[in-house]
Amino acid sequence: MKAIDGVRYVSVAGGLGAPLGRADFVRRAEEIVGTIGRLRGELGLNEAVRVALEQFADAEPHAELKRFGAMVALARQQAMIQQQLDDDREQLHHGHLGHEQLSVLGHHYEMLRRSACDYNHELRGVIESCGHYFTRDELMDWLASASQGRREWARAEITGAVSEIALHAALQGLPELRGLRYATLAEDLAGFDFVATWDGQLVTIDAKTGLYRPLSERKHGHKHLEVSVPREAVEGFRVTRRGLNLLRHEVRQALYHH
Image: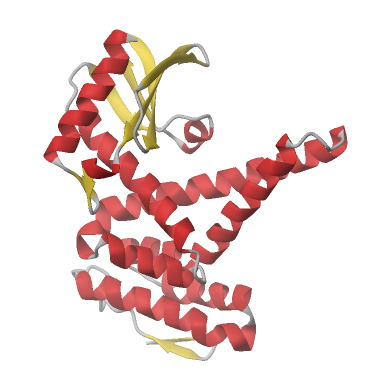
């Protein structure tokens, strides 16, 4: 048992190497949301989040619970980053800033994009490795609560992550795509979610949410596909059999017919 900033704390999973279960993740999410809510009035929101991170991520010996704890605790910060990104994007495109202002704002925008992209990678990883411990609705509620009510942000984050997971599952069933992998953070910032080789050439793929015809184009000197993942292709965190068939058909349409 540990005491951090006066709060007594026990790792919910017992000790390093102890098996995790659904109850561990449910309890951990409730502890994080409760801690932030309890300390917010006394310490302020930023300090409350810092304590939650230290208590439920930094001090957690279990790798999965550590990642999960950081993801939930950082929800408010990431929701505000997304809001700032939206504001910055509007400023950058309205055309009323001078060169120096554009340069400063552009640098700030790219820093925020990197943080948001990194969070998306972490969220996707947590869902892939731990999604069988909780439901999509539960995760939505936890992120919405931890972000102080930013439910639309939470929905968009989860939808984006699940779309990538679903498309990844579909792409794995296409033998013509060699060396398939998720994009690195730098590649993601350039607009790619997946990287593979097709017919001996580099191809990148971007997962989109919604429903529209697949797009094939040249981007940065190579073949690039944009493939939508419609809502009905996914149930919870997993792509359906019908969704797999639909997505594979859409990818092949883009590969061979555009």
